[in-house]
Image 1 (cartoon, one colour):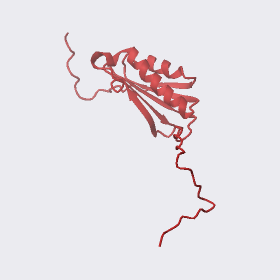
Image 2 (cartoon, one colour):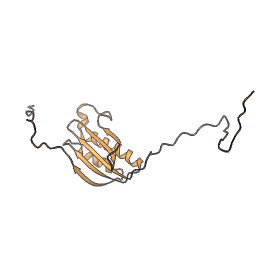
Image 3 (cartoon, one colour):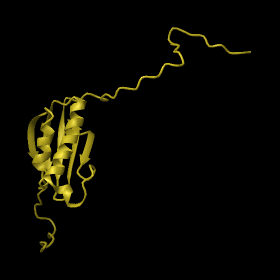
Image 4 (cartoon, rainbow, N blue to C red):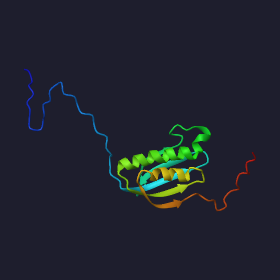
Length: 144
């Protein structure tokens, strides 16, 4: 008993020589506004983008881009990180964002400027750098 394949209305028979089309890469969900979090320390700059609810969509840092050692804390490395995040946000369809900045590193402004270069409007910039209100005794100052 040989089984024969019958075609129905839902099935489509393709010739054997026809190649499958490559899938087109598109954004999974459309987000029009979000929050850009910039964490700028002396040693590194980390940038992450989240929706308005705080769910992280994507992130990057200077170390993740291949900068090593003292080069991670430079403004150039921070601008490259902001450029990567801005490119990903633009493909997702982001039109505007709020910015939250933490830390006192030199990568604060360059990361935001590189992000803005992708035609994304910035509504507000909030500085959320943690400031101690006198807790335990601080470390002694470093002598160089």
